[in-house]
Amino acid sequence: MRLLAVFLAFFISLIQCSKYHPGLYGNYENILVSLNNENYKQILFNQTSDILYFVEFYAHWCGSCKRYAPKWIDLAQQTINWHKKIIKFAVLNCGDPLNGQTCGEFNIEMYPTVRLFPLRANFSPPLHNAIEFDPEEKDLFIPKIINYIEEVEDKPTNWPSLEPYRSSNLNELFINSNFDQKIAFLIVEKEEESLIGREVILDLSDQNVTIRRTTPKVNPKLLENFDLNLERLPSVLVIQNNGQEKFSYISIDLKNKSSQANGDYRKVMYDEIRRYLHIVPDFESSTLVKNFTSNLESFTNQNNNLTKASMNMRDLETGLSTILRYEIPHFNVIQGDEFVVLKNWIHVLSKFFPGRQEVRNYLGNLNTKLHKSEKITKNEWLKMVNENQTSDSFLPEKSEWVHCKGSKPDFRGFPCSLWTLFHTLTISQIEYENSKTKPFDENFNVLEVFESIRTFVKFFFRCSECSKNFQKETYDYLEHLKQPHDAVLYLWKVHNRVNKRLADDITTDPAHPKIQFPSRELCSVCYNETGEFREDEVFKFLSNFYSGSKMVQALEKFSISKNNFQELKSENELILNHENSSKKNHSTYSMYLILLAISVVGLQQL
Ligand SMILES: Cc1cc2nc3c(=O)[nH]c(=O)nc-3n(C[C@H](O)[C@H](O)[C@H](O)COP(=O)(O)OP(=O)(O)OC[C@H]3O[C@@H](n4cnc5c(N)ncnc54)[C@H](O)[C@@H]3O)c2cc1C
Image (cartoon, rainbow, N blue to C red; front, side, top):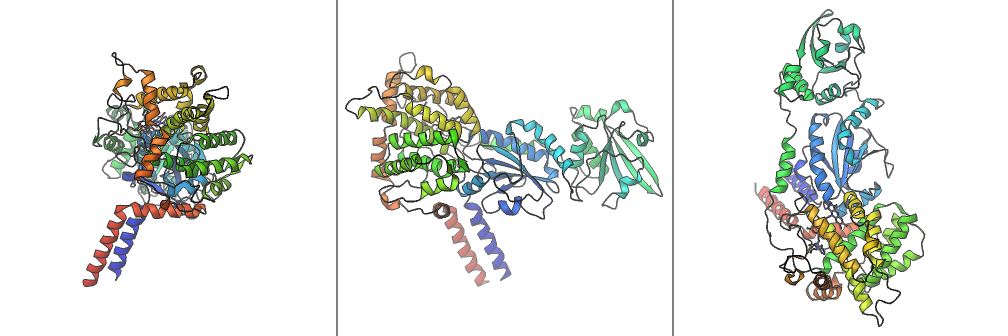
């Protein structure tokens, strides 16, 4: 019976794991704590824990997060021995809709966001007393963490002291110790501010040994007793307690060893101290990072030739749903300039989104409701986007990516759908004008769609690097947007510049190389004899490729029907629905159930 319970627990845990998106760190659970909607409170706000948490909030679809991931892994690896007693590195994938509510509580506005959670943090959204770190200042993380650790009040008793050793009596090295030990180590550095000694103390914090640090300035009296060459610091004194206030010592000269280790004193000290503790050195920080990169590089190139030829309305609807239901609600309150941008964006969507009638009705209703307000809270927004849907006015939740499907779950997806939505809107603006009896009259504003896209990206696209780059890459839009077709072609050119910049980047799906679009295979007439683009032909091609009416026809013919519509009454229900659908979609889920059934039958027969 006990065996059966163990099996059941095992299978249930597999099912639990499988419902979350694997994210970017699936292979690193040995060094990174994976937070999610269900476990984050218990981990971050555990009132009996002696561990700090350093958390990266990211989205699996965000290119800058993918580029950031090896750095985060490297940092976690560099501090691996601190994880046991002092600080753990953790990750939370805000790109997974199941974590949407949680990331909203944390008010995550940009990816990646990095925060340090204090000991026994109180649950007090959105910041929970956490300290925000600038992700770009990665090189300062370790010094900042060390300073923070030093300043923690009421430190747990099992944390090592990072304070310089000031006593002139060696006894205290042993008296203060929690361990029954004969040996202690004293790191002697030139400057009190030096980081190396503190890093090494933390690197060895998982060992039952006292290691302290000091400097000739801080403790001249004590150091007089040792035969130390102060010109050759840093140095390590191995001090043996022989009892009855008698001590012997060895001074380890690190200079020679450090030249063999390229001046890496941290590694040399660590290895030497471990040697004296009779532990074989094993400090190799770069292995995991190398694995990570080669994992990314080794994905098979399934389709090297073409970007798929058709655009798909399901991708646009899923992208739209992601924006409205998961991205925008990360703000607790939207007001001021941001609210103006939001209103404008919804207005543009309601006017130009070329989807099926039900979705357009939905956007129209949203636009009307929003125009009555001056600001909006997250809950009001969620209510607005999820409630009061009818069979004539709805936005489907999420479905599988079609055109934007990557060869692995963390490739393509949402950012791809954003680009396609933006292109579709610029084309739709032209289609809208052409449907009028007097197209392109004095009321036509070529900036209307593009400016709305630009400001939306600025305030609401939480891939911070993408958002900043897009502002830079489009700084001159006013000079270029004069004629009716200019917005379409300008956005096309900007996107191609981004494609060029990212062509060899590790974030690019090898099965979908970033090409100058459209390729010759997609549009041979788009190229002239010298291989340059013919913009009039490109415009025609884009008008066809991003034609909303064609996408809707294809959608009605092949895929989602009204029957798939579910009325969503609340945020919880929304998440529940997603859970249900993602569970249903998971082939692994049914596989586990089959395995479970087999094992139960097998056990009963035992
Ligand atoms: C506004 C914005 C800025 C971004 N900035 C960055 C950044 O700075 N750094 C970063 O790492 N990632 C950035 N990204 C993400 C990146 O551009 C891709 O979206 C992501 O890598 C997924 O690429 P993908 O292969 O799906 O193709 P995407 O580049 O997303 O393209 C989607 C689809 O658009 C079509 N397409 C391609 N090029 C064009 C074109 N020139 N004109 C019209 N249609 C085209 C193709 O059918 C393609 O499949 C940004 C995304 C957006 C929306």
